[in-house]
Image 1 (cartoon, rainbow, N blue to C red):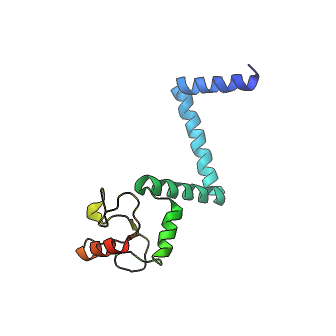
Image 2: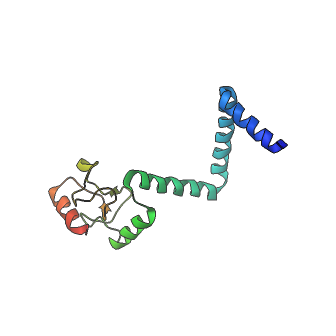
Image 3: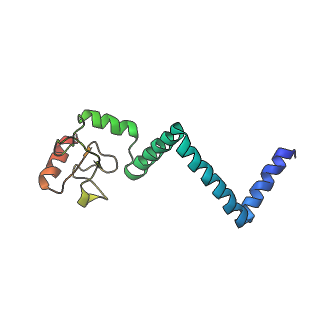
Length: 131
């Protein structure tokens, strides 16, 4: 076993067994990431993009490319009311149908998104526009 391999196994063992050492290393790592996030705009933008991608995939089962393509197909407007989208978007579901199937009958990643309202008219519009 060479020196670098020995150091790596010693570090892993100590990290696993010593809670004080582990909390100290976590603090150092956290401080490093915070400093880099604040000082390196490219790193900060990468963190934001990564969190957006994983949030969309985890919550809605949709990837960013599909979301952007659907937004372009809807011409930047809500699929229900055809108003231009603002800061808050609702993906795949009116508020009362947060978990389960949407008004269009699709589950997971639907073919439409927008600022859904809780009206029957909006539900009918969703079912016709999400083809």
